[in-house]
Amino acid sequence: MILINGEPDNRINVQDRGVQYGDGVFESIAFRNGTAEFLQAHLQRLMLGCERLKIQLDLPTLQRELDNLLAELQADQVIKIIITRGEGGRGYRFAPEMHATRILSTHPMPVYPESYDQHGIELFVCSYRLSINPALAGIKHLNRLEQVLARSEWQDEQFAEGLMFDTQGRLIEGTMSNVFIVNNGALKTPKLDNAGICGIMREKIINLAGDLGIRCDIVEISQNDLLNADEMFVCNSLIGIWPVRAIPALQKTFSRRQLSDALLLAQKNMNRI
Image (cartoon, rainbow, N blue to C red; front, top):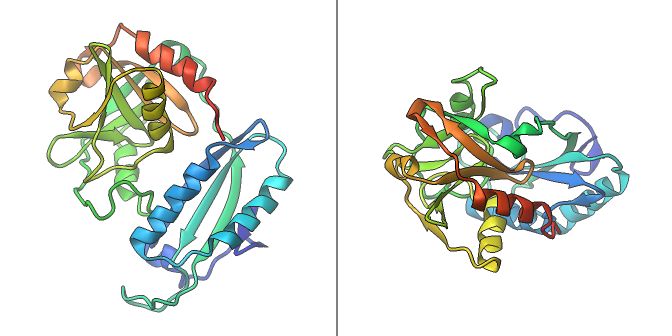
């Protein structure tokens, strides 16, 4: 199903700034068991992205269109929301009164091996480095070329995900996930002030750790921190939590999984509204 500005369609104007410049934001939402999971958190991040990019979004209209779409869904799906600045002429300058384009679409839920949850995954280390840009850090803007290029570095099914560092050598995220390490029973996750996406599941895990009395520090993480970690896992709102078994390029294996397993169990039972 695809809705463009509330109407069934699968085409947008070639002058749309989302096509011309990647000028917009998006969200991917899991619809499982009849529920759009963490919907309000996704919408809040969408609005934050629009505010950061100065895109004028009619949120009540988007909400009505989303409600209509949700009423039609039966099977588990991925709902993707794309908001562009709208249609405009050539040049980077945009008119303040531009009307945003709203694109809602549904897609099959990705299927991953059960072993990812049960036995953990192996990570590839991407050579592509994330640029430092505080103005765009945290939001889910449409320009994903850094992730596209990083994900193109490996084809081996041995690796379920790839790690991305910034140009200063700091660990930031996976190509499609946020990362956590565990050291001496405490969680650490990278600061995302200069690069990366502030993921919805990342936020939920930080809050969940607080509820469970687990220390969680948001800090800069180096490769040495990674090598000294006891455990590691990656997460996003579609996959949940995947424990990490090994990072072959760094000759690093993780044998302890007490905390990541506990969080995985808690995450599967958390309130997803």
